[in-house]
Image (cartoon, rainbow, N blue to C red; front, side, top):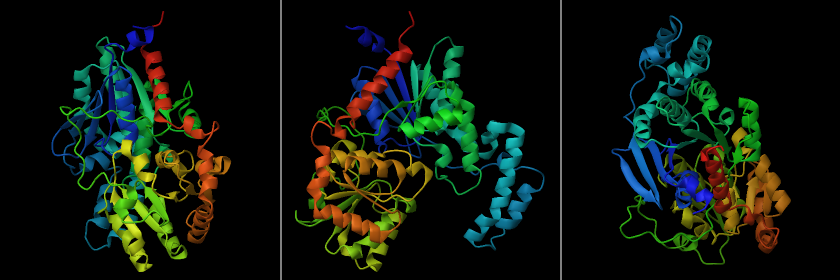
Length: 466
């Protein structure tokens, strides 16, 4: 047994994430590859599920813990100066204002709450502005303590505080537990996940309070690594772990091994078969989350300019509200018969599934977090050898222009998107050639290469100093 193997022997890693795990490929890949490398891994998710769920990802144990049902926030938690709560009540609780008008009326009140609590508590203002963050501590904290980890890997921002407090408790008990924070996005550039003025300043303060507890930081791109150094005065530059796909053929699951339940409808048929299309029909694919800022509406508006071209949407929930809106828009443009909505497939099968398309689409609007990284679907399309048509968001547009693997169009410009698609369909081999040969970027764009970096970081943190 080598020295590196000795480092891993018996060392427990707990990973934390604020979701139900199934749809988060980065989290799944990190847990499974760390377990494959010899670490004793437990991945803990927190989500609104009815009961605790357990299964295994390879040798990693997965536990998804149920968050309590959403509760009304106590008035004292968000009230500010005298009269603020009453003003909110008068403005929005009468029932006489339309919803949009009520939201606009709330804004001055919410901004006043932010100013008041930040003046009193500084970064600790999240305790009053976003008290729901305590739910993650209440649910996951005791489980982490029970597992007695040597290292805690906190994914994204909500679990950073949970991990930091668990590390404090472990060290108070005499255990030298290490903390890795995995920053999935640049929080100042994130779209708030709730429609109020409190959400972003509360979470920014939450991260600032706890980021100093991290023994190491990892993130998804070089640009984001530089932003984190700047924002938090980090003593060391974060390790970049790209959201690249797994390229090795997965081992078959043992019959006795419990697995996560898969949604119905995920058959073994390929993308074209699921769409009912012959090989010679031009097929565009968009795979990933659906929201207005993702730009799929622009693709639908371009379809009338692309006769005979079909679009496949591979999405988490085909019945979600925004998906239905996109389908309705396609019908209004009289291209509904050329739009096909399909559910996700497991991330280890996705590259092969996508490969039957002709073009992979990334039609993002300009938004700070869209500018700074190569996103997961970028790498998935690349490994599927698909030419990529991407909007002019900075990092991905620069990469596509440098490699020649696709075309760039002006964000939200349907005519320019159609132009880019026509250019690729006219000579697809030219763009696919970027993936071939010794200089291919695919050699670095693999999860296996990223997993080696993560394993090296764990070993560095947990190897006793001489």
